[in-house]
Image (cartoon, rainbow, N blue to C red; front, side, top):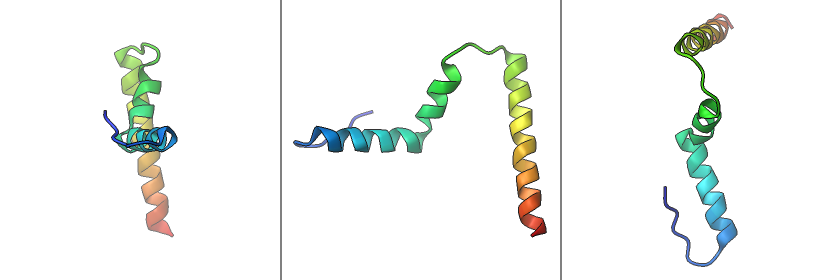
Length: 62
């Protein structure tokens, strides 16, 4: 990932952090920090889907 800023280093860092957040790199880095077996990955994926489903149901009710 490249960021082009002429002079200000702080501005370049700010832009880089924003781009990383928008692309989901922070989540990806956190997820890959430690190995998790496929069974754990699948379980977490199902739990996240269930959370999203409940949240959507809650929104629809009121």
